[in-house]
Structure formats: structure tokens, C-alpha cells
Amino acid sequence: MLRFSYVVCGRGIAKRFSSSFCGEKTLPPNLLLPTNLVDPDRLKRPPPPTDCSLPLLRKCDAGIPTHLSPVQTWVETLERKDSEPLGLAQLHPDVFAVPPRLDILHSVERWQRNYKRISHAHTKVRSEVSGGGRKPWRQKGGGRARHGSIRSPIWRGGGVAHGPRGPTSYYYMLPMKVRVQGLKVALSSKMTQYYLYIVDSLNIPTSDPQYLLDLIQHRHWGESVLVVHVSEEFPENILQATANLKTVNLIPAIGLNVHSILKHEALILTVETVKFLEDKLLWHDQRYTPLYPFKLPYSDFP
Image 1 (cartoon, helix red, strand yellow):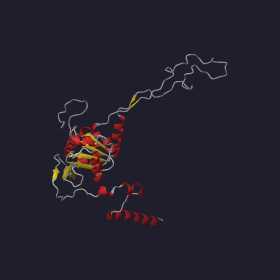
Image 2: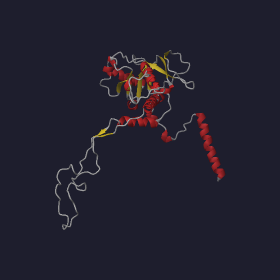
Image 3: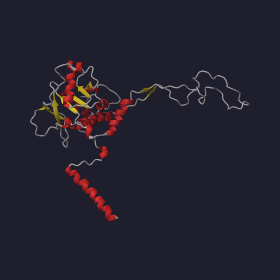
Image 4: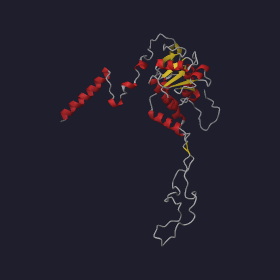
């Protein structure tokens, strides 16, 4: 019996060991993504190779730890529909290549849904319900149970015991470090899934919404797109093109949040937005002044 179990275990270990070299999937079938949900055309363009001949349009200026290397990605343009890249951009690994933390994403998403939530559910207690001022019947001799008011919680139409007494606020605040890390994990997840794209600018040649829809479909950017710009003022053409589109939304970089990133399938960043996000998020890793209590302006704020 011992010899038989040893042989079976040995075969299983050998199979897993050999599959790691031959490229065989080691995940169980219930965890594999169905092939009908994967767009093969979106995966045609591989990540930039190390010896790419295209120019480096954006270099990471922030200090990178010695054990890490910058993340390279393509820089595209919105001025034409073809998907040929213009060059390369370097991204900071502490912002766009952090380890996945689903617990932090869940905490930040739940906080964003609840910290503005107010429940207006309100019930009346027995003293607030109208009627029931007199005793319904005498205490003894009637053969019925003893009652002092028909508005008791055990009566139909009476008051409610231990009911909601709204408005109730569900406000709470997550630590700043957790919120910053959640934004980093969300950006890194989009980068790992090849759903984060860098463009040189948001200038498009026309304000026709169909041009933007055809461009998104031609480049296989997914069903919904979130466009992020460093300034709160967007170009006029892209504003008019996305005015009536429900699947393409614009947001300034100062308002970028985890909920908006996870809600959309693709994330579009400009080159200036990448620098803005890196400066703001990396500042939290090395700040020395506390954020609470608020004392503006911060001496080391970028």
C-alpha cells in the first residue's frame, strides 16, 4: 500500500514538474478563462522587446530601486485609426507593476461605495404611532390577554421595536496608505491584463462619435473605455465625440479612483497623465509630514 501511494504521488509530482517546462497549463479547468471570452486579436501585439528600434518618447525620471527595472509599453496616437505605435514609454514599477492585492482592491471598492451612503429608512416606535391612548379592555375578567395599548409592537399597525431610525450614515475613512496602494494595484492590474494604453495626446481629427467608436473597435480596446487627462480641460473634439457615448467616459487625473478603473475595461492615459500619477503616488511612499490633522499647504507636496 505504501509502495503504491509512493508511485502515484511520484507520478503526480513528475507530471507537474514536466508541465512547468513544456508550457502546459497547471491551473485546474474551473479556473481557466473560457476561450470564447478571450479576444485573440487583442493579444496580437506583444509587449515591446528590449531591442526595439522605436524612439523612447517618455523616460521615467523618478528614482527606481536597484532590484527593479522600468516597465516599457507602447505609445499610440488617436489621430489615425491604424494601430502602429509612435514609440515607447517607461513606467515606474512601484506604480504600474506592484504585486496584486485583491484584499486592498476590495477594501477600497467597498469604502467608495459606502462612505457617501446614507440610509433614510425610518420606522415609528409605539410612542410615535397615532391612537392607542386608552386601554383596549379591562385587565381581568374578559378572558383575553392583558394589553395596555393597541399600538404595542406586538399588535398589527402598532409601533416597530428595534427598527431603523434613519437617516443613518455609513461614513468611514480608510487610511491614506491603503487608498494609495489600491490605486497602484488597480493600475498594475490593468497593465498586467494589457488593458492600459498610453497615447501622446487626446487630439482627434473630428468630433464625430463614430470615428472614436471605429478606432476603439479597430484596436480591440474592449467594450468600455476610460480616458484620463492631466488637465480638467479636454480638447473640444473629444468632448463632443464622447458627449452621447455611454461606454466612453472622460475623467481628470486628479479624480481617478479605483471604482472607475475597475468599472471600465480599458484605461487610456496620456504621457502627461503618467508623470502626474507617478509624482503623486510615489510622494506617499516617502512623505515625512502627516496628512492628519490637515495643515495646508504641505511643505513636501509635489
